[in-house]
Length: 281
Ligand code: SF4
Image (cartoon, rainbow, N blue to C red):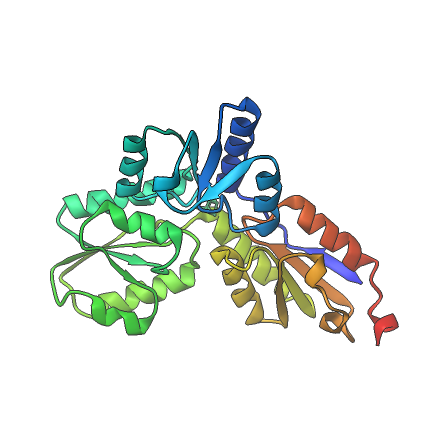
């Protein structure tokens, strides 16, 4: 098949730093090491690091030895529990997520009621919401009834959302007539660049493959955006590929989320390039 790659795809700086931190800690070999939650939303990477000795814990009470805070970050209460437990903390929170946490705290200090446009169950959003009291999390127009009727509103966004979604939600909030609305752009530029490159490619091909973990918010968003232009498949790797996905097609595009390692992309592209859809029909 003809296979084109998005000009920007795969691992972002924040994910690379988190994985490097884990690898360094594993090499140092100073007792048990675990990550609080899976280090990234990619099953294959989590499995490889688990084989090298990185445990995954979900409860800070289970922490022993060294605990790695993943790029999504943690809320202040969780960090305090870890400090009190006396474990060594390696903080791999992405600098952009840390910035969002600081902005939330500053907005609250300046008297704004903080609104986070994001998925309430996403770990980054859950952590960010911990940096101010009474944060309201909204992600769809029907969530807006949770907003206070008046007062000063300070808005930020989940880093992995698209600029279009952020802008649309801000517009809907402003339309509710608040006297003062402060908007701080906390979107991740790495994600925005991957989204723009994916859409550009989706317009040139007959089918898109978006590689990445099923739980990865930024990968799902890439798939959603590509799906607006061309039939799109969100796969975790080549093992999920089925010949019917490319039946009758010549040109395929490939992109990948910010937590998808290069080897998964290369394996997929190499196998798709030598795949002949006509032989399978
Ligand atoms: S996607 Fe952006 S915000 Fe998230 S970890 Fe990567 S660089 Fe940081």
